[in-house]
Length: 224
Image (tube, rainbow, N blue to C red; front, side, top):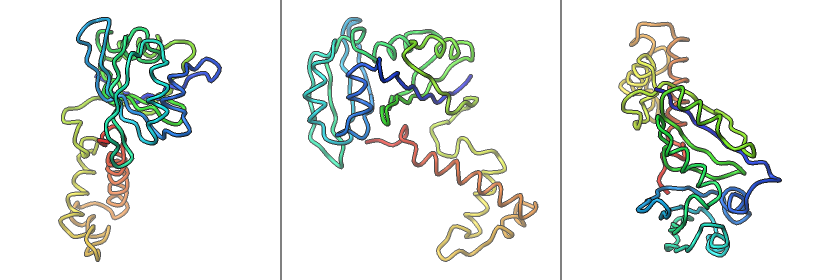
C-alpha cells in the first residue's frame, strides 16, 4: 500500500474563481477543506478553515456554482471556520475530490490544503488505484508527486517514518542528554551508545531530526 503527497496546480487561464478564492486570494493565506458530510448524494455540508480575513470568502463563495450558503464561526488565532452547504458535483474542485474519494482502492486523507496557488493532499491506496487516480486528473490540473512511501501502521505518530537505527539514535541522544540545555552529550557519546562510528551516529540524528521537524510543521497534522 502506498502513501503519496500530491501538489495539484491549476492552469491560471482555466482556474475557476472558487480555486482562486481558496488558493490565491490576497486576503487569505491558506484554506483547508477539513470535513464533509454527504447526507444525500446530491448535497453536502463542507467544513473549511480559513486563515486570514474571511470576509472575501463569505462574500464570494456563495457566487460559486453549487454553493448555497456560507456560515462563519468567530475568528480565533487567525483562523475562521466556514460551513458550506453545497451541491458537490456542481462545485468546482470539490467535484474532482469527490470523484477521487468515490473511486475504489484509494482514500483521500483530510484536510485538503489550498495555498500558494495550489491544492495539496495525501492519497492512500494500492499502487494501481493511486496511479489511475493521478492519471484521471483533468487536463487543466498539473499533478506533482512530492512524496511517495510505503504505508506502515501507526503513521499518525511523528516517529512513524524513522528507521530503527534513527529511532535508536534519537532515544540514545535523549537519554544521554544530547538535547538538554546545556547539552550534556556529543555525537561521539551517541556513537558509543550505538556502537558505531561518530559520523554514522551524526547521520542518523540529522536524518531523524529532519523527519521529526517536518512532521511537527506538517500542515496536514496541525489543527487550526
